[in-house]
Amino acid sequence: MTRHGWSTGKIAVALYPFGAGAAAVNVFFASLIFSWIGGPIASWAWSIGLGCVIGVPATWYFARHIRHLMTLADEGTPR
Image (cartoon, rainbow, N blue to C red; front, side):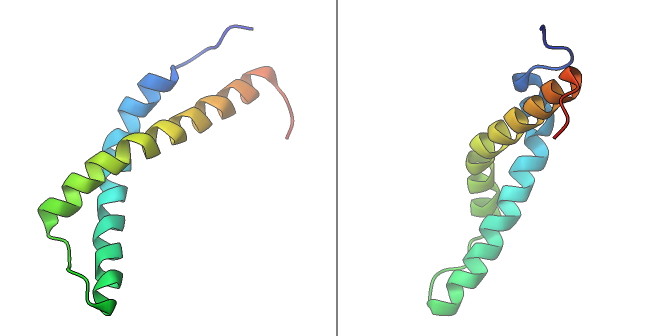
């Protein structure tokens, strides 16, 4: 069976801004929690930078999951 719709790469590129933004917010909040035990609080620049780096693999794995769900839906396989 051939795949219909977007490839995993296209899905990942389309979702990357959301994945990087979510990762940046999580990095910032993790630094706030870490500050309770004396750690530094991440600046907005560090949060965005680390979010962009962490967002790449996170978005790729999420796009693979979405592509898998699309394939299951095309096959008509009940879950």
